[in-house]
Amino acid sequence: MFSKVDGRWGITSFGLKVIGILLMVVDHIHEMFYYVGIPTAFTMIGRVVAPIFLFLAAEGYYYTHSKFGYLRNLLVGFWITSMMELVLQLYLPNPHIVLINSIFGTLFLSLSLMWIVDGLSHPKQNTKMFMFALGALLILIVASLGIFALMSLNDMTLLRTYMIFVPSFLTVEGGLPFMLLGVLFHWTRGNTKIQALVMLLFGLSTLLYVHDGITWMTIFAAPFIYFYNGEQGKKSKWFFYVFYPTHIAILYIAATLLFPK
Image (tube, rainbow, N blue to C red; front, side, top):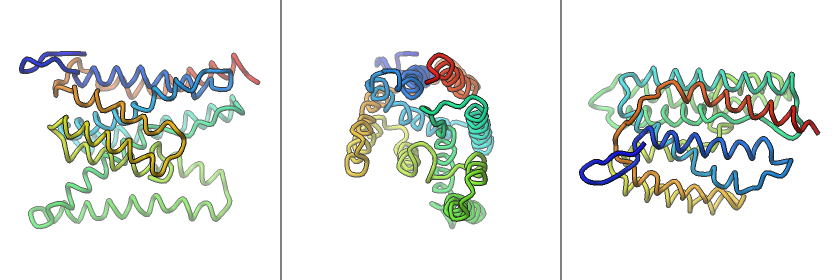
């Protein structure tokens, strides 16, 4: 989890992932058990989770041998998690819990935006990539705005089905701001001081448009980012893909069976 690089101790990529996973579980314990008295402090702690995973996604985007493969895995993870959440709520309903979020959708859209921005940045050097990126951007916009068209039909089943298969910046966890945060991590990659500053400014900026009293606490992800040392650490490529939907299912089932009312 920790290693020494150039005489300075820091956190490896694996270490950040472990920290993110542990704090995510704490956050989701509040989400599933808030109605039986789990304190708000649990979800306050969890505000750092999404920024940490967006930071790691930007690192993964840089190092991956296949950006298409990376995006595919995230999209499949989004589909699996979304379908699992739908099935759980159909066959084991809990009036206190609404399962609608999946970090996979946010990561997928953020990485897609990184790819699009890279493609649009050098139109003369790579015309094909520019046209591909422009087309991908239009698809993302149309796919997201398609939600409004479905809402006008007043068919909740159709709308929910659409949301299961099509991640949208209007519905994914954190929305467009988190997608852009991932792009900022991508642009500033290699300088953890600047990235930590980006995180601080982002967290403070949420005070202007989010009034829940806790979203600004994303600023506390800044120290973790600052002490990242660029080392991978232990490999665990598929662990998160399996753990994420599994832990949501376990916590939801436990909350529903133990505290049904």
